Length: 398
Image (cartoon, rainbow, N blue to C red; front, top):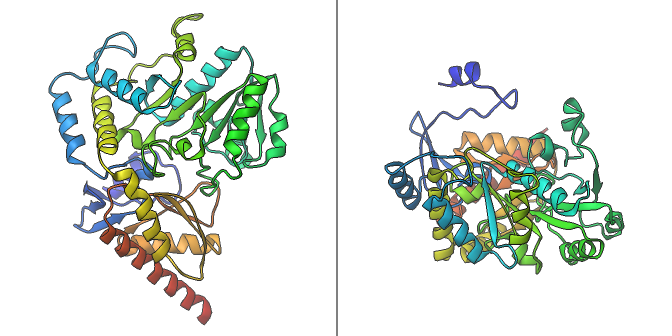
């Protein structure tokens, strides 16, 4: 399978990890050789309630027996999508009352950008340096990392950048600005938390000049930070919120939510201001509904904060400079990128799945399923510390 994988399936890097997957359950991925791999990545924060959660699998099977795709988004009333958006509205703070379902997080960002320009009649969109919002052309335009964007220019115009957490840069938000778009917690940059009421100050500045605040909750959302949505930790409400990843419990979905007043603008002038064939797909919506129900009806969000304490307690080693993030959205910051690479690759050999972050090369991602057990956390932490001791020993011998 690995040979065919490399030959026929388009790759994203020259050296993929290429685990040959047989099946997955809970916190483990099992490869075709029968080895169980403890998963500290959860499909890059996507498998929020673990692999093949029974409630989600049951919802998928039940819906599959009824109907699959029947019509493009927004034309037919379909129970899974209706119930999902209704439940989201019940859990989102006012005025975020209406949700547009799409296929992925990056499409949610595209829709949010379009909505902001439609609502304000302005064109400038301001993003943060070292931001990651996806890889379609609009989302890519929000990235200032020249190495990644240069081959694909020209990108969407009238995009400006500010430094995350730098309050002086808020002066750049003016009456020409349609929207400011920020990750609630910067992901690819190294799980950078907002400080000193930064997000509240951005929202206040946006209100002053008539701009909209879009928060990207694609990674922090759905219980990962101890709240259903990461922005709830920071005492503000965005004008538009973009969702994805953990929303589907392992199936592909995205969404953007706003007030009735804002969202209704996509219905007219022009009609079909945003359109998608498979957004709100009943099978996907059923899985997302089951995921949201599982997260909100259990104590998984509260558990994520207790599990964070376990990680911080048991990941103690001189090569670890700090642990960033909140809840089960954590990143180890190591002394060097070389050490991070060695840790991830050696962990793979020891059947522990770790992964990189996009921009911060010293970082190692720790985003396990919210359902991970304390025993599994201790097991994985033990493997990480043992590997770091091996690396430290090898460096001393050199």
